[in-house]
Image (cartoon, rainbow over all chains, first blue to last red; front, side, top):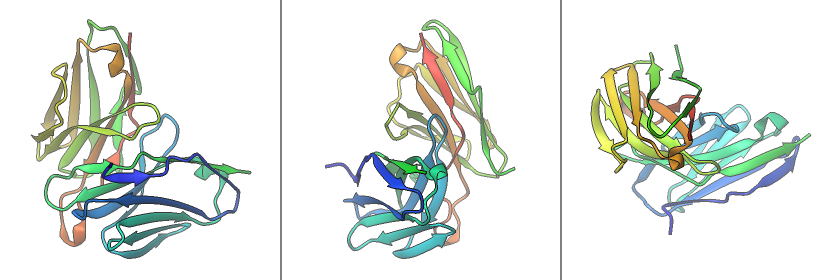
Length: 112
Length: 117
């Protein structure tokens, strides 16, 4: 079993839809949670960073963490064609290792 | 300056060549990373530098040699690579660890697309 599971998709939605992207993890030592957006042939862009259970909102993006269920989500409201990209969850344990464990990535296409 | 820069953007090299990849950040970050990413896969960690010292080497072959000359600059020296080393090479950096959990997030550069012939 992988430490971090993420549905690879692909996921296609119409413009304006609410998108839900999810990761589950097995290691309770993960304490820091990130979501990255990666366009084709570009570097990952940090969208959201959180370290506590609950919701964190930034514009059209909401990151949700449920440590008791070991489940994290990224919601995108009013999705746009420019949101079409691969979304990666990244998890990190506490301590100085700074080792980021990525999910496999979900490929999202928002259709105009 | 709020970004990580990488040069070159693209690199094509033969198996006998020696080349270097360069990464730079001026955000005061004290941890820097090299990752390798193959198509449709997540990034794989290669090396971590913390305060200019190599702290993690993920069993990377010796044909990859990292160097951190100062807190803003990270190099990856390449020698005698194989075609299977063709990939996107990503550099990242993290701010100093602080209160409230800051310091674990990583900011990535645009990458260098490497092709080994």
